[in-house]
Image (tube, helix red, strand yellow):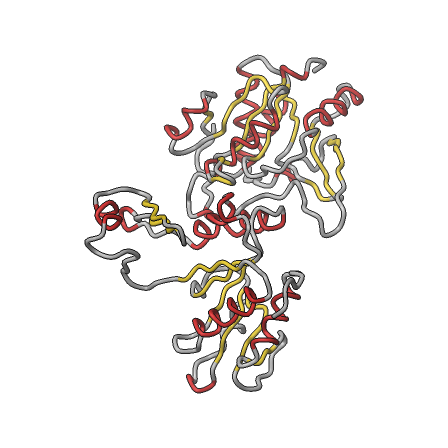
Length: 381
């Protein structure tokens, strides 16, 4: 344990990732890099050898050129099963210890492994596991484990134990501790869903603040959207917009060169002129881009100058939303069943526990949005 460059590490990426739509979580990209690459960067210079706990689509991970470790016990039993697999692998290669890390924590502190190794040196062998606490919250998937725990862990799994904290409850666990200021970003945040990824990028400044306009057809979403964009741009803000279309549409004119190029199969097609450029990306196999994939585009350098992103449509997606409501439609209000709605712009008075705005008062609505997303006013008309 004195030579930290020989510390075996297993990155746990063997879950079903249901909240990610079943995609391989480790390969989902932030800033054009897969999550897994961030973990590999953090352990670079400290970890050797490295194993990847993978249970499906192994071919997609062969490019990383690390051993792929399938769960020893089948059935997707959770991270504790991945830890058991890591311990078994470490023992097979004659190691007494193994460090496990989740694949979905790309913002881990750079000094995490040195701090773990320093504590292990101080404690000598007076521990079973070294894990992490951040602001007093434990993160048990991150752990330096003794391989002699294999038999106990196997028996626990067979007895139905699935929670790491329950398994280690009677063990000698030591903790590396971190603290971060209130309202700042937690570096140990797990990215379990697309919205987690987007929120992390927004907090860290990779994405502008964003919200959606939700309402029934005919409620005036487009009218409010265009009015709000004009008002905010007049104030000096760079506002972007994503609008959902429910039907096929053409962005360029049939017969034009750009149209012919796109129809020939070019993906993507970029149309550029002195006044604007457009990016057209054909969805293959009817695989429409999700809202989260569309929003993620705005984390790229080309779009990073935006102060605010407004989404029209996608009313069922779990993003912050402003509801637009008209009484004459005689439809139910959406906010009562959607906790993501933070306010209602209405053409009449209603009772609500969230802010109610005057749908015809664009000044009131724009001031509310600026205040909510802490955008400082720039240039007044």
